[in-house]
Each structure stands twice: as C-alpha cells, then as structure tokens.
Image (cartoon, rainbow, N blue to C red; front, side, top):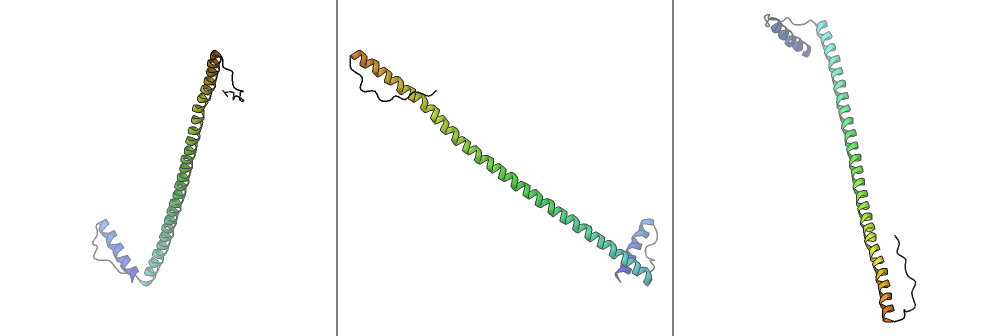
Amino acid sequence: MNDKLYHWAEMRAKMRIMGFNAHAVKPLNEDAAAELGAELLGEATIFVVAGGCLVLEYWRHQALRRRKERERHAAWSAMRDEVGHLALALEALQDRVQAAPLQSAVVELQAQMREVRAQLGARDPPSAPQATPKE
C-alpha cells in the first residue's frame, strides 16, 4: 500500500516538473510495487546506517574534545599551582636576601662598639665566636 502511495506521489511530482498532466497516474502492478518497496527498504537501511555512523562519529569527536579540554584544564591548574609555589619560594629567598644585610650591619655595629671601647680604654669582654658574613 505504501509503495503505491509512494509511486503515486513520485509520479505526480515528476510529471509536474516535466509539465505534463499530473492527474492521470496509473497504479503499479504487484511485481513493480514489490520491487519498488525492496528498493525503498534498501535505501532506508543505507540511510539509517549512514546516519547512525554520523551520529556515533559526532559523539566520539565530542568525547575526545571534552577529554582534551579536561587535560588542558588540569595542566593549567598544575601550572598555576607551580607558579604559586615558586612565588612562595621567591618570597622566602627575598626575605633571606633582606636578612643578609642586617647580619652585615650587626657585624659593623660590633666593630664600631669595639672602636668605642678602645677609645674609652675599656677592655673587650671575652669574645664570642663571631659569625662571618656570607656573601
């Protein structure tokens, strides 16, 4: 039944395109209808399989894109964490560098105190081991 309806719609469209009278479409016989039905079924099967392949490929591509995005995000987070750790290490190094001039200032003050004591004639107390400035 559907084959006859398909044939009727197809023939009307073809006849209108060619400019003929589309009202006089002869119905198909049983053999031609069966052949047309088999052809339609085969084409529909190919269309469904091809469409399914396209959908599956699209899903695969989207999953791959999401995985790459997650990996990119994880790498970006790791880099941000590493930059944070490096910033903390830099601050610690800067603190150590700032503390180094204070040590040399302490050594300089000790030397000045010795000079003042020498000028006043006072004896130096027993000297403690002195830290040598590291440069």
